Length: 167
Image (cartoon, rainbow, N blue to C red; front, side, top):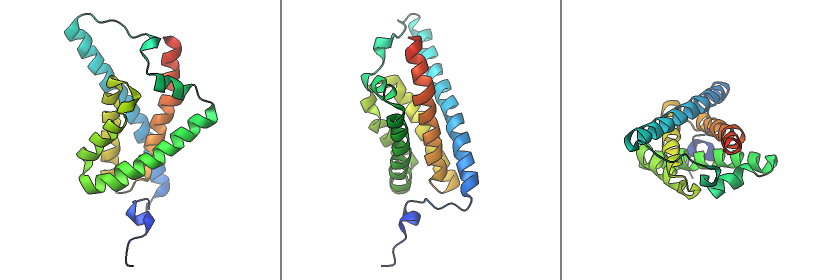
């Protein structure tokens, strides 16, 4: 038919797969730090402007987030694997190439609104921006998939469980 292969259509091919995998881990880790920094900065600004605000409690956590991190390890691994592959193929490979980085980033953020965490949307906007820039820079989705998985793994296996225990 003269059409591109699925791998070319989804921009899965990489001339340097090992380098892209390594870059994905680094980008996902640094993206997580950037996300936490941006969110903490916004919270700090909120506290400074309000001068007083109640501290969040464990009951303030979204039931969906709490449910996700209390699932058995195999389920959580499956969630991370499916999210990193499906979401990046859709939002980067398919949407970003058609509607652009800004629109695909906003759609990615909106798609995560079901988590019920308005402040979390700031973090999702930040990491989605990082992933969009990664896709534009590398020209393939492989580092985005790995970065997304790294970010989600840090969140689901380390950060959120620590926050819930502390609360």
